[in-house]
Image (tube, rainbow, N blue to C red):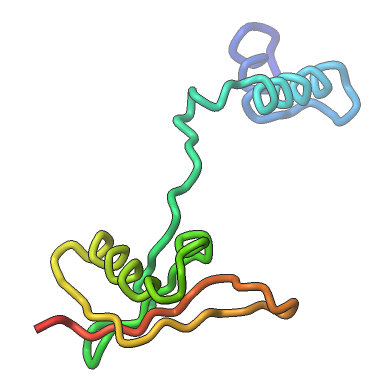
Length: 122
């Protein structure tokens, strides 16, 4: 390889330095500095909103997955109304009538989410 600017840039881009060399260590340090020192706001990294996902299509009905946090603290008598409201926000073009809501538990018997079974509203 020649000596000059472009061969040096080529070696940096292709990471052509042997492991344990000064140049290799500098590259690793630059990468780690980028990872740990770059502010979150630069990438517009925001927490994900709570999810409502349609699991099964609308043929005879629809099945929705709702995260457990969405229904936390809601009295059992109001769960169906809250689920219909959340589904309405997600499926803006269609209205659904929730027929039943079932909690989904993990191995430790903690609620991981809810399955909502719904029919298209007339």
